Image: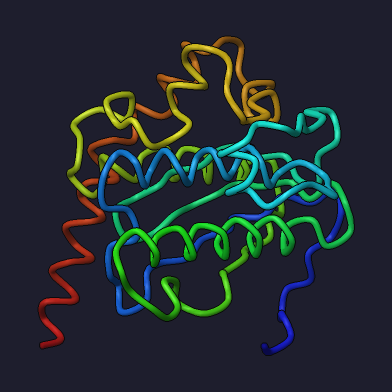
Length: 214
């Protein structure tokens, strides 16, 4: 595997994303989305621990929720790709988290759908977050993915993102990293919702440009 150009440093935030190989779907139904979300919660925590499949089946291990290798700030699982906003807490934490998460999920997916080979498109992408402004804007971008792709009209209608965690409370995300920049959850919702039309317009322009290349 080639060396990563952008180093992953403890205490820093990164936008992490990847898509299915050949842009294929990586989630097929509710069961696959749910399995991926369960694995997010499991692999963000420090090991050693049993294989996730054994944990799911036997429930004989209780991971310590206070021992984390990464903070998940927000996420969105789209039909053929995923986005995370992540803060690294332990050396190598992001790489370990993504590697174990995607390897475990690929094995599950390939077994379930009788396929072989990689499910995701090579090494995951990582963009360093360099300012507070960028941090909150990337969180909004991630939460608007379903809307900009016209899967839903409102981000809270999409089940497979962390947006409803932000609006309604508990979940896997460390929401304070974003919400501390706002007076209230309602202010964050307004900050996000105000960009819906613009996000959709950008997506349409992008598709028009890509169509024009054919």
